[in-house]
Length: 355
Image 1 (tube, rainbow, N blue to C red):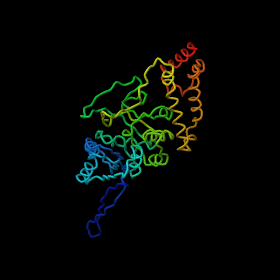
Image 2: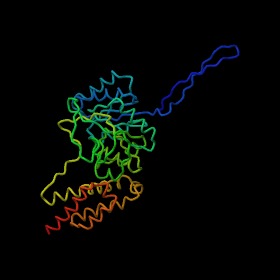
Image 3: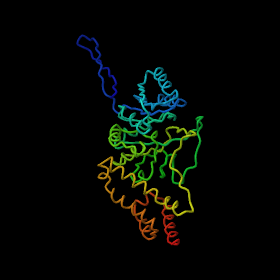
Image 4: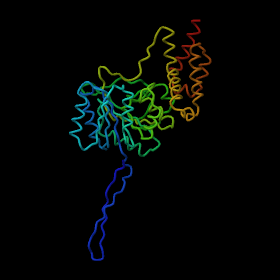
């Protein structure tokens, strides 16, 4: 839905009488912006979330809310909000049966009309410049199909708190990569194949990527992981290292991968060493099924798959020199840190000693 501005032109006839002519012209860069929100039992915080979206410095055009059979007052809170905010297009859809969060977000995205679609949780708080900053970057860089931002943590009371970051991290996302503040950087398929680095509530998608997601949807991935993987297929997944919203942590929710702790058993230690490659192989297996073009668009898809398979095989056999030789591979440098690569070699040596 394009927006227009009115221009008034005046002119005088031969008798000196003035006339006005109003011409409507499309405003460049003024794209339609949608928000897709999936709700379930969110009565406590949803009004605060909606307020933060409503008060953006660059207004959104529509908010699509799909409720997944809440048994609290979520629907009533949203309905009251709609009545008291008639200057913004908010649509509420109520599922007849519980779909689960993956399908519920899929439905919300499918109902959006925007050129750009933000994904929203029901309990976070957006900073007032979130939409303006992210849309500005994407409009200036049409090669970006998905843009993720960073965030800060808040507790149930809305108080900001910090968590210790891994030395490889530069933000609260799960991206193991050093990125300067306010930099916009591309994220490769290889980085995304080993872990889901971005929460859905951090993402803004183009209409074209939304259509791709709906076409390739599968419940074998969480929705946000599939979205960023599809964007990486065309090298159009980017990260903006700026904190643009507050991510609320509850007693019952969690973020990130489970910590892989050290163990004295060979089996657990092996799992820690091969987990990332197993994740990458699973990702590639699913993408082959849901997206017939993915393998063709990632030019070294087969070589990467072969590397992961051999890496797992070498670690299981304790093949020290073969793992050592793999250190020359660019794939190895993406999926594991220098320290992790050294630990792989130590693991192989321990395997040989035990034999």
